[in-house]
Figure 1: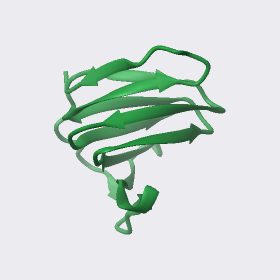
Figure 2: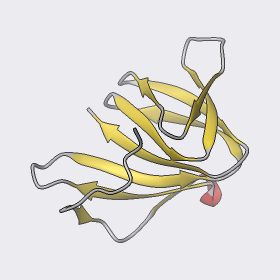
Figure 3: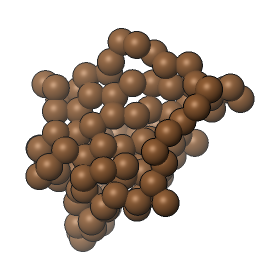
Figure 4: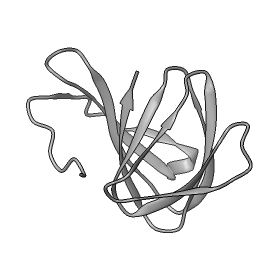
Length: 105
């Protein structure tokens, strides 16, 4: 199931812009203090580092991703997600806009 709406959150209005605008996100905080980000990755191949574990939920579009230390590229489409360990990285290949929610921790 794809998350289509997150109610009752606080939104940081200034966007986080990465990779010359190829990734743009906004931080949100839920009433219980849980932090997430919602954003879009535009067509590109990018490498992201993680501090905490992350779950990348695909809201729309799709991507291919490869976790650090692996050789295989995997796909993620709307309604799917993939997990990334903390203190790690992943590569992402996007050919159409990839809309996501990043769940931290």
